[in-house]
Length: 328
Ligand code: NAP
Image 1 (cartoon, rainbow, N blue to C red):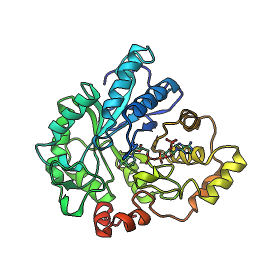
Image 2 (cartoon, protein in one colour; image 1 turned 90 degrees about the vertical axis):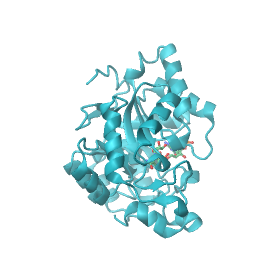
Image 3 (tube, rainbow, N blue to C red; image 1 turned 30 degrees about the vertical axis):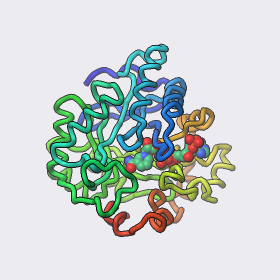
Image 4 (cartoon, rainbow, N blue to C red; image 1 turned 30 degrees about the horizontal axis):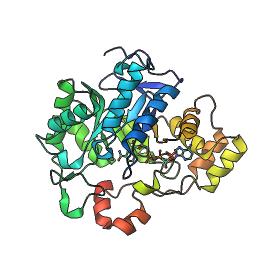
């Protein structure tokens, strides 16, 4: 493993990924501003995040944030904010239309060209479905859905790691069932499964399954997601969380992020606002009490990201059920 010299300037704890042995900071900066991505806004936000001490950045082909992240990294190096790109942990993802045997490596090379990097720290299969090649759309259209050739696509992901283009590989939005299939057939097991994870969607079964199999669960939409990107205000408006936040002198966002961190997962948060990105970093020098954790445990569960409201607008329901396997 190469020495990543300075991944934690803001005291963000790191974990070691089981298969690759790579270090990953346990708080990452989300960059999905989809569908309203402004190149300069993303670049400025990433640069500010580096200044504040974020060292882990999450992007995807679909987010159109690869290019501005690349520019922000170059700028951060030239301003001396970081010594080199080695100081950062960058994740990107394979879009569904490239999730076909033979298209994976070219897709990663394309992403690397956009980010202007020689390698990515973590490459993920974005969703457990394939869509017609050439379509970069979200939500995916039902008529574009194709069954994924999991074995062949994963073998191509392994090739990305062997060739040194991705230091670690993993999946996203995979249920226990789909993850089991990859684990049973992999030569290089996935290091990460990135999924929705928040106090209103605690995914206990999936979290325990990931832990038992040495896969680091990475939590997205911990704050309930960008409403324009299929999220809702349910998490930030949750009365139980507001009560805990008030009593503790923290914000609801901080309670959510701290809770997720205490579940032993890696946490992502997206904010392009200077004050809120700072607030999201300030979760490592205090903890939730047993009683507070118990209150959060008892919150009724419902999927937020691409949940019922979103489906009723964008349906059809079976399309999304196919994505989730209908599992809790
Ligand atoms: P999120 O982090 O749960 O929430 C983002 C929203 O919360 C934004 O509207 C943001 O607005 C606001 N926010 C951030 N910090 C706040 C705070 N302290 N107080 C109040 N509001 C705050 O949502 P997310 O973007 O869905 O998830 C995070 C990242 O995970 C994404 O950016 C992406 O990188 C990744 N992700 C992956 C998948 C996948 O399929 N693998 C799916 C969704 C997301 P401001 O920017 O205005 O602060």
